[in-house]
Image (cartoon, rainbow, N blue to C red):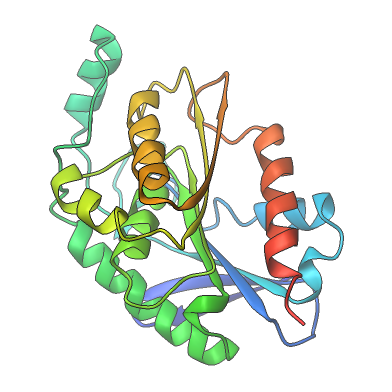
Length: 245
């Protein structure tokens, strides 16, 4: 598969294509906090291997978060917005679930605007529309793309939220209530020590109550993407992305 690093707006983005055929769909996946910009790129060949034919007319894109983190030992670590690391560490030590439902990160609106601008340019270059676009991500990237999806004025093909959470409920829930036509795939580990399982359950319930076509795949494990989730995601993507004429 060919990987190309390009600039769109203020963000760098890795484009992964398995075929020279003009794409009819794009899958955009955003990495999590503390990961390098290339962190999820290997998902493209993995998904295409699990779902033969997926890569024929589907292009994958992996935006790189704008913030560079100065962590010792975290080579190339980046973030969409800064986290309260002390609160996360306290929650882990105390065993107290940490809810994000009342939080609106200071950097979320800026990150969402940067991502939206970059993706608009990316779609223009690919000759695709938002209705031919599936967006999503892992952890912080999942929360960012969920926020973008529910505030988008253009309908999307789908949303993927891997180990995400309900973020800033008072702002998010009214928008989610209008997402009856959104196709959503979610996964989360029941023993996730970073983002609580209860936050994923709350997000799932919000989409389900809105009437969205949402599939929630819990698994026994932590803050990760297990093979069982990748297999199910590959099946869904093949069904969604190869249904175009």
